[in-house]
Image (cartoon, rainbow, N blue to C red):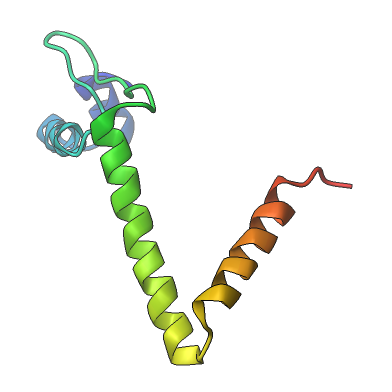
Length: 94
C-alpha cells in the first residue's frame, strides 16, 4: 500500500484523511502498520482479518436467512441452492 503522503497526493486529499483511514483499517485488522513504513496487507491467515471476514459473512447469512423466511424458503432448499451455486462458480468455464 502506498505511504500516506503518496496516496494523499494521488487522491488529492489531505494526508490526515488518509492517516485516519489507515488507522481504521489497522484497527479492523485489515492492514498492518509498522512504525516508519507504509501499511501492508496481512497474511490472509491473520486472526483479526479472518474475524472481520467472518463478521461480513455472518451479516450476509443473516440477511439471506431473513429474506428466505419472508419468501417461504426452508433451510434445506437454501443449502441446496448454495451447493449448486458453489458448483457453478467452481466449475471450469466451457
